[in-house]
Image 1 (cartoon, rainbow, N blue to C red):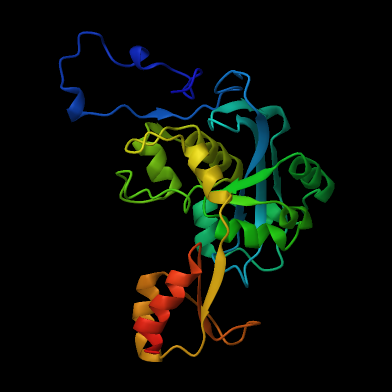
Image 2: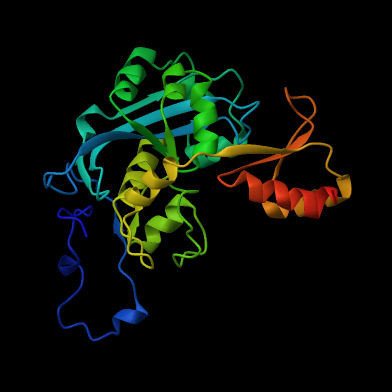
Length: 285
């Protein structure tokens, strides 16, 4: 539980006290409203982190480009994972003209058109100043956002990253998917998604939640996952007829036309186990 609510209205303002319906038969959904502070400090070690989100011309990390960037910094208690102050006054959101046109699908999802970004650019100094104060960068699906922002702003490459999508086993926690808007609804809120700052706020609200099965705070789990070392494992010259096996294992294909391409790859914090699996299931040696 947090000391301060992330809703602008309380449940009592919506639900009549005399309602007789079984609470297990209905659910209250309210608009997300990020407070200036989720919790007061309690004497623990305070650290700063930044939530980042990008909107892009499409879904390819190789050929698509950033059209919108948002940053939202906040303080948290390092030992407990409690979210403290949210630096809303210093939140950043900016549009930029990409190197390629915005795809029709991206325009429909984000509402951002080529006309809206024409001649726009993002102040690199402003981005660097926000990132410089943070000890951790967090995104929902960081494997995409990190690649996209590091193309343009080198300050991100020097910072450790964490991912709210991959750091939590959402299925074991009772959720059937890991999409940000779906998780928000399961925790009782909705928001105007697919604009960068709104997604940053939703990610921050997610970090402030307590997981239903493990009882751990999301921020604590995400930070712990960020402390682990990940290894890149490449399945070089893997047999073509085993591509579905590799996909099911979580491997991705890097095309031949890209640098260091024509290879299946994955990341893991247990490379010995992964290599043993490749020897047994893929190479037979």
